[in-house]
Length: 612
Image (cartoon, rainbow, N blue to C red; front, side):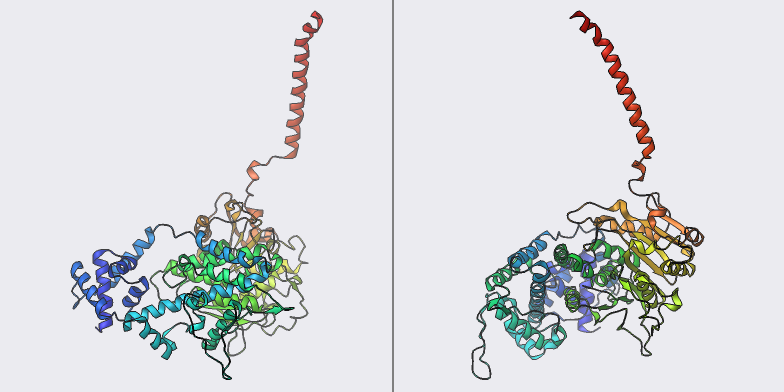
């Protein structure tokens, strides 16, 4: 064994013998969880003082550092999995949410919701980059003895870090907690910014110079922009935001927050923006619970290739990776994620979201329907194991534009639709699936009903028929009303599969999730604790009274390809409803009974009137 392998095996053996998680071992050794993780992975070698502490703990655990057990890694992994399975609930996002919203309110009066996020998200991203930079410098300091030496080494070799931050862009300098000697420019003029707005603009531009991959991601706004001689954002307001983000309780480093914890706080902010952004909000934000439901139904496996052709903020792709980690916590093979997005703003947010979650997403900009960017060497649409998407609902579709579609997505899959483009998106989805591919796509409920009963005259109905006859529709999930921010209408998740298991062949699973809804303000939501049971029930594929129906291809044909779950599964309030005729009859009976009581009462009171 090499020295690194020996240390890694020793640490695993210590954890196995003492029944410790990596977090608990880190506490015993007086280092961070991330450091122990790197030592166990053989990435880094502890310094002399740390090795002495490890040796003392090994002696306590009865581990021979010269010959640690070959089975120690497996035994340590079992400790980690067992602890994960019985772990208490993850920390609430309330404090993080409050930090984000406090920061937003600091500048809310200056910009409407659609605009202030343009300033707030790059700041949040810069804070994350700075905290991660500090973590990595601390790691180098453990290896090389002190922080000053670590900074000198990092200055010489930026490849040691995920992203190198020049001094003026580090949060301790931006917040004023450390000073920075601003140099003069080439003409000898001072470069010191006159306020925080200028400082932030100089900082993000300096970050992009050192990290070109962040161009168009972090430098999307000018914090010092002026209009008619006035700043767009008052520097005093910006200073309030910086101070809010500087609260030590809200550190965003590698070991400070769980990936899903930060992601959910981040999506909380997007949700708050969506409340005030009208129609545009739904174009880049899919409710968190819907994204996790789709991911749990897809059950992604390590190394699978996943695509979202209308990715917005990349939330659906991020959730696939989070669920993949949950399903296989010891795998070190990530998903391979690919996303395409039309708007520059959402593209930048998607890049931030991926980096904040420490994930790699290959991104492209452009109109997917007209110009899909991910193609093979022979100019065909690239295919994937999983496709997830929430494209624009009921988007106008002109079949004349696609009469000679270079990718032949429509002619061979039921023909080109007219009017609304929902089934065109599903035809594109099908073109993106490999031979074992599966997909989950969010659409308007009308997509699974329009045209049924039209006697073969409706093109949407005919495309649905083609999909059913080719056994490509695995199921349809009806979501609750008032869940999405750009509409109060219910949506559906259409699940496609090109390789159904034998038990699901020639069958379609229809799930009505309406019973799982909880009322919220301003929007309803599906509780987090219902997501996994819903996905499990769908994947099991057996009828459940009032929630799941399983129909055959023949039954779908008899219904003229109306695939709405509400047609096959009773509505939530169905058992409480009565025919109107019965209600009216009961009212007449009550009226008759009231007249009878009045007559008896008058008869009883009549003698009293005679006595007068």
